[in-house]
Image (tube, rainbow, N blue to C red; front, side, top):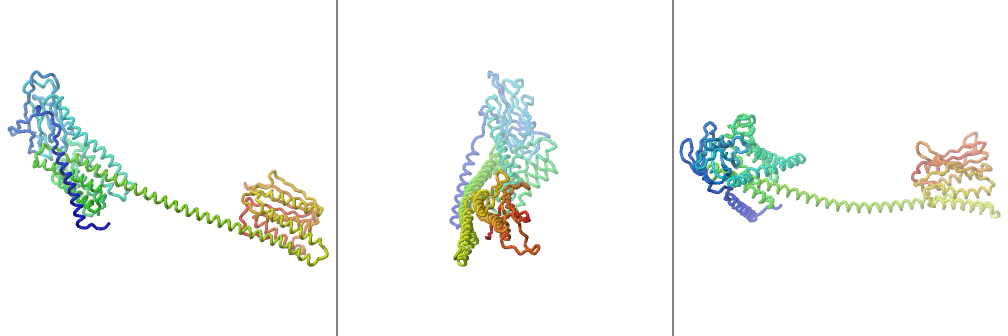
Length: 628
């Protein structure tokens, strides 16, 4: 981002300050709104204070910070006119600090110290009590209020209302809704948000701002639900520490805003936690009294310093980024700062007020603004994820198109290579088979111009070889039995010409197993091998019959075919044995053809004849190259 010029920076600052001024005007309007009050007819404003024994006007600020041993006593009088219908009367105390004991005509009817939730000095909890009918007289009645103070604030007693319960109860209920129920609802929502943020921090340790905010909100929730006992208890020190924990809450808040808004966190930020830790240690080791004193000395100043720092951080973030989130957060900080300053001025009796504290209520504006900021960040992250996903989909589609084109080219290349291989094989087969036969025909024609029998025989052999090549090119769907059927017809006619009987036997019902991977190159090698075996029997063995056996054998869980060609001729002697002459190339060619198909060839010859056994593989391998 390019650095801002001075005019643009000044314009942004003026815009930000103008908006904050509007927020302050709104806060002033809210603060001027009257709190729920009963009709003035039932209001008591004059009282006699003992000690020192003087008339005072309510609301009254008592200077003492501890009156548990000798609480001041306020004496008031009220009249119940005669002739009124029988209905319950009540005493309403809208505000007091810290506790009260109320008596009517000398009989105590209320002691707020029994309700710890009403003893918190930072809350505006009202109390209402119905006067027993036996204690209420027509005409003049005496009301006595004892004020118990145990710090850290001085004592305070607001105007008291005495009258029909139906007249006082609505104002009491409205105050309870505003100062008791609403903070509890906000605290419950805040507790849920604290749990969610804590889980987010545990899952995303590289974003400590979530952990800082979770800690701040957890401390705020504990402050809401912790009571303030009037006397000593087992957990009085811990309660005092939790009630006096706003400095720690504020320090974690500063940490969150700095990290959340992308500011650089300095090491000196750890100093913000020192006052809160001092208050905590004082409360744990010294008890509630020293904790209250330490909080009065350090707490308000620390909270004010943290709020000012947050306001500065948010303002700088807005000047740098000018986004709506910074503006909302800045407005919320202004609201909290205003009501915090108002409460401090009320405590110091500088601003006329009936000691109604709104800081904790105004904190909900901060929580709402933070929720808006987190939602905005989540929505922005989701948009980035969607954008990234869209880009990834586009890239994947482009990659798929490229891969599909590459596969098409590879398939086309593979088809071309297969076609070239088949063409090469066909040319080699024609050269090795038909070409050799044609050369023989030419040679015979040149040597034997007068006789045509050898030439005719060579021509027929060439024709048979041509038919073999053509038959091998047929699509047999992996069924070798179809090729063997055509081969049987050719061999049968060849053997009849030599008066040799053909014994064709299929020993298994299906003959040979199917081989989907079978290629024409495999077929022609097998047929040439079988041709070679039959030709040897016809030319050299002097056989009277040839038996061809076809079967399927199963072993080691896989089935494979076996083809046997056996004759009843005179056999032959293996090359190199008993002084036999070296054999021709026929047997070597047969073995080479078997190896090219992955088959096993076995030749057994003796006085009873010769048997050629070809064990086919369970699966034919690809042909790298075949010979003829």
